[in-house]
Amino acid sequence: MRHNVTLKQFRCFLAVAETGSFTAAALRLHITQSALTATIQQLEEVLGLRLFDRTTRRVTLTGHAERFRPEAERLVNGIDGAVSDLVALAQGERGHIRIGAASSVISQFLVPALPRFRDAYPGITVSLRNPAAQQTERLVLEGEVDFAIDSKYRGAEELDYTPLVGDCYGAVCHRDSPLATLDRPIHWTDLPTGGYIGFSADTGIGHFLRTHAAHWSMLQGEHDEVESTTYLFAMLARGNYYSVLPALAYQRNEFPELVFRELHGPRLSRELCVITRPLRSLAPSAQRLLALLTDTLTEMPMPPGVTLLARR
Image (cartoon, rainbow, N blue to C red; front, side, top):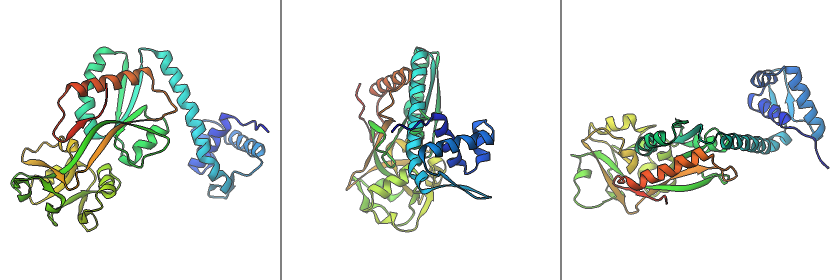
């Protein structure tokens, strides 16, 4: 049996589910509340079940609606993505590319590549976003960015991850510290038990270390934490502290007194990947930018600890 449901009904359902209010959902959709209520009632009649429990203060999803919501989101996002692709194809040499990327990727790779892209395709504009690590995959899934360049955070099955560069982890400290002056490769067991500044669990670096460096006891104990490298480097430059970072993140450091020593036993390396939705073809403009980025990376020397993985 076919169910006559519409995209409008799905959008109305999702708006109420996200806002928890018919009033707020109607404002978001720019329709009257009575029209929204009628649309939801029509959807409930077609499906033969109630989607929302209503109280004087809040609208909540029923159990059936909770299970239905992810499918509705997937369908709406898929249609939106297909329409965006069609528009991009029609635009040809013009368009706008939305990219989400880690700060280190933006500064080290995208910034050098963008002037060349601008010269070749002056009609295409670009916006760069630097989302929190746990948001990047969601932005790609929901179509808010065309693609992202970052490491895997959770590794969504609905996404494709194409390796771009490998980025090894190492200790960053003042050049006069005992750790920096060791005349042999540094192992995890060489790291001091005090003075470590780590990253919070919701950051990409913090999440990676908690997942892949469980052998290191310092992660289990109390220590100072930061959310970005912006003020981390200033703290490290004062001496008596150290941190563990990927090599590319260290490259953003502006303090000449800081050094990076790759860690061994085991050697840890993250993959920075181009993250895309497999069911959605990239717009031609985005494909051109990625091709030019790969060419740029192939031609430029990689910083110490960073390995090119992309293929031309």
